[in-house]
Image (cartoon, rainbow, N blue to C red; front, side, top):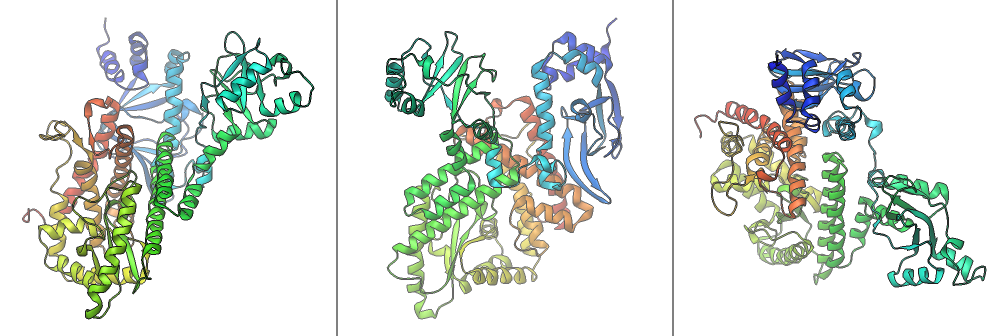
Length: 638
């Protein structure tokens, strides 16, 4: 007789990793032993420091929150929904739980017995690798380190140099080799032709048996110890020191130091008894270490030409790709790339000033706007910037503005050559509208706030996220003080911002399908920026402005600050912060894959798991928009 419940459980499980790596027969055996648990909102599955259970869990319906607790302090680490695994600790390491798991809403979870699962999957390396990776990635999850900063902290490198050390080393693929029957003369000719410093001696099965370097030729041939026609086997270093692909830069460097060598042979299984697939040299290690934030920032500061600035910024893209691949926390990635972007802008301004015929007539500040102003710019995007200069007598205004417009044109031209496109709407400091004196800027913002209209709201979404990159801090502080004192005089501006913030509905339709573009070149594509990221960006901006909080521009940091200020909405604000970071990472990955902005996504290219992860990030959008509608009384203002 068929077990219909087990079959239904199996049908569900096979749609998610690692269960989709199992045969139907194995899956049914596991499904037969699964326990189904219904949970009301707030019900607890396990608590921090509880003895490990004999099962791990997968969410069938609903959502499960995992949070870290320390006394009365509770920090949400993650929110798991349909298809997500949690409670893997007893499967990997028999230790008490580090987090507490509770139902975030009415939920159903499947408890998978560990003993049954292990007996059926012990010989399945794919499953084992997936589970270890899943457990490790939870340990490196943005919430774990970035939100709480208290768990698994020992596993995360703390400095930019450490981050580089823990990246996978880039080694030379398809290395030049010679056979054991070769003469040293033939090997040396190969080395000369390919301009390489070493050659690996391999047997008939392409297994490495020795290595010859320039030093060996100098010390053993040039000194007359061996004739040039000697077999390579007479002077090669053997046995070779091997490693497998995936080793970190730190591991590679450590092995070289420990064994006093300059080369590691990379083989299929990491031993000298398998095929050679690459060589890691001391030079490769130095190159890897060179592509880190510290070195890139030094290159930027020393650059004397735009060409050098572009080369340094392109290294930032390589670093970004590497960080994403290494699953480095997104907050760290954003901080690093933001520093690089700001450094590039600062140097572009400095170089432009050197080209000006005279020094600036008055003090000024260069402002980054939009995503760079929020310190969220990861990929190359178009420029959004402005310039504010100190007040001058009316008769000197035109001349002073002309000076700074000329300076701004040099800067924006340089940024364009580096890779930041000109803004199509001309929202740049080279436009007289965005290059003004302090008083003119104060008047501009005052007008936007006290007499809001559609244009004012549109511009506010760019200009209210400014960040001083270069120049006089006092000018920007004065401008900020004026903005917040003006905001106290009206509530109407908040309503306009609120209406704009809720105009984009939740990214899912009535039947939970993604809302895609309906026409144009992007037809059937999903706009992750306008439908998912912008609603969170707009909501965070509005709420933080209404709290009269300055100096917090980053969207995730704004939500984190709001979580502090509004304990009753802490869970929602934290989920918004997490969703924004996860969406930003997803957009960046898509942009790197398609070498574009990542803004439009072809949903057909996504896996079922990726679509589920996206859907999970959409949950807070509708909730935060409902908060805005109520708080700013928008229902009669739409």
